[in-house]
Amino acid sequence: MTTKRFVVKVGTSSITDENSRLDVGKVAILVSMLMKEIKNGRAPILVSSGAIGAGLGRLGLPRPDDMQGLQAAAAVGQGILMQTYEFFFNNYEQPIAQLLLTGDDFTDDERKRNLSNTLETLIKWGVIPIINENDTVATQEIKVGDNDTIASYVTMAVDAEVLVILTDVDGLYTSNPSDSDGEFVKMVKEVTPEVEGWASKAGKGFGGMYTKVQAAKRLAKMGKTTVIASSNVPDALSKVFAGEIGTLFLPRGDEIDE
Image (cartoon, rainbow, N blue to C red; front, side, top):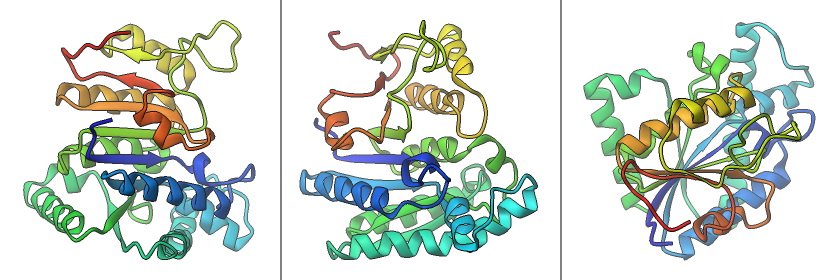
């Protein structure tokens, strides 16, 4: 509840419909949740997937299997995605900014420093940065859902206290959520091989739970908190900060009462 600066990552499923097309209703709900947190005194940074889905929806095409098709769809959809965000944030007179990143922006010292300075300036100006992987030039990111990784690096770059990963499941389970024997995990004190095993059972694929748990593990080592929660819960962000939903990954060595 004391969080002042946080990163929220939304996966494709959180802002698209059952056909993986951009769902403006879901975008509107996300924007309203972020604006509510601003009123609560928090500064959000948004890492958003969805460019490929927006592009495919505009073109009326099914999801292609080849990398060139995915990159081309992202090129069409990124502008549409930002236009949609601009429309809804403008209703609150809230300025936004777009940043398209790859892993190199976090490994090259000069680019990393420039990114941190730009983000700090935007936050100082009261602008919400909206970040996405640069799908049109990146390749591996599209395959593994690397926005989870990018979100963890952004959290460190802006020294945010919390990363909230909104997805289409309630959080981490001990098995695939569709399995009857899978149990929901409310709190993870340390990402052990056993925890990684649970995430692997839930899926290592595109944007799967494994990449989310790895992001949480990376941040825990840096003393930062991660929450994985469902975007389908009404007022999800407020409930995350109230500790009512999601799986909480504690910073290393940090413990709270059950």
